[in-house]
Image 1: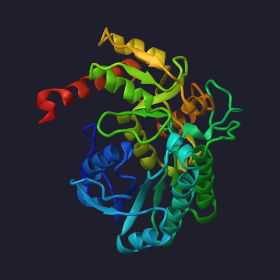
Image 2 (image 1 turned 90 degrees about the vertical axis):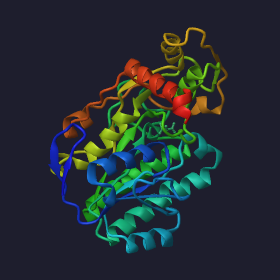
Image 3 (image 1 turned 120 degrees about the horizontal axis):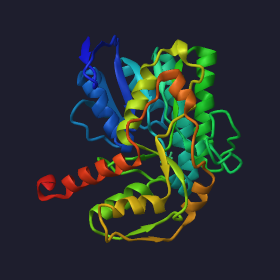
Length: 332
Ligand code: AKB
């Protein structure tokens, strides 16, 4: 198959089976499926989620990753070449229901890896998170190898997934890859229960002309990335020459970092009357265990990580897109 890449160049993709996406209805899944369809052809993508995902552009189905039978059956019935395993319960929601977070993140990942192994899948990409870091991790320019010791169920299960992925690679030669995503900012589909969600909520409020009550303190600095860069990074890592990878499942990636106070100031450039009240809740405690900035050199050196959006370009793009959506034409 010959396809045109997003940058305009034409490249060849040799697919024996299809590309499966779990968690396809989520914040990242929705946009990843769109990009995969345009890059590899919609006939080669299967989008799945717990509830039937609304993705008219390609084949889609229901799959509960916590059910080993459901996962096995799905893999048996489809010829799958590679997997983007996005189904996960994020940090804040994970603290509300740690049992569910364990089941989806830990058991779900094991089910997907086992089914991949049994059915001859070539590659599994599993996003990880800055949630794998903990209170003992240094705060600034944190490298890949450092003290992690997360204290949330999200972090504990995600570091388990990183290690499990490496184990399957070492023991069974299943090509598992992953990257530690920071807070992801997007406008097409809402975020789902994370600690960094405040950033999207704040931008949406500003565009709607509403004030915002922020659940983090104004000086809480966290690493972030705009969704187009997150999608490109996921695809770039998945297509990278495996022989050049020294790390496998734990690449740090982030494009910029900011505090809620800095985001508020940036938004005032567009909406001078915008105001934010700061009322930190239990999510503040989670954010305080995460680093402020990351060292992403391993991702740059090993597979060419190169985000395009800085904070001000991200805000400009978000404001333009959200304003278009809320204009009478956008609502039609
Ligand atoms: C969350 O806040 O839980 C996620 C993440 C940083 O992984 N956005």
